[in-house]
Image 1: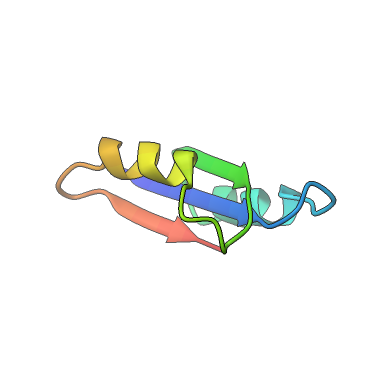
Image 2: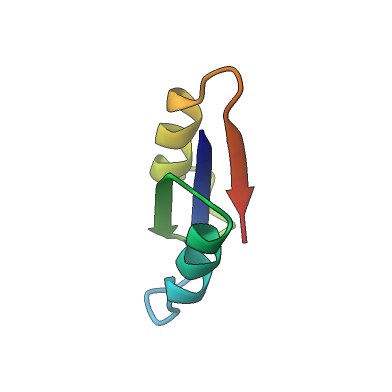
Length: 61
């Protein structure tokens, strides 16, 4: 399965360009969040990592 992960740093930024690119790359499942890269906790990233299985491919844009 191709899984996408998108992140922007602020609520003012738009996730659409990233999610559109992930869809175009064939992502069947997507995780996204609006959180600073300086934050140690990224709940959606953690959720995605917990769900990964052998053979999955992670795509970021």
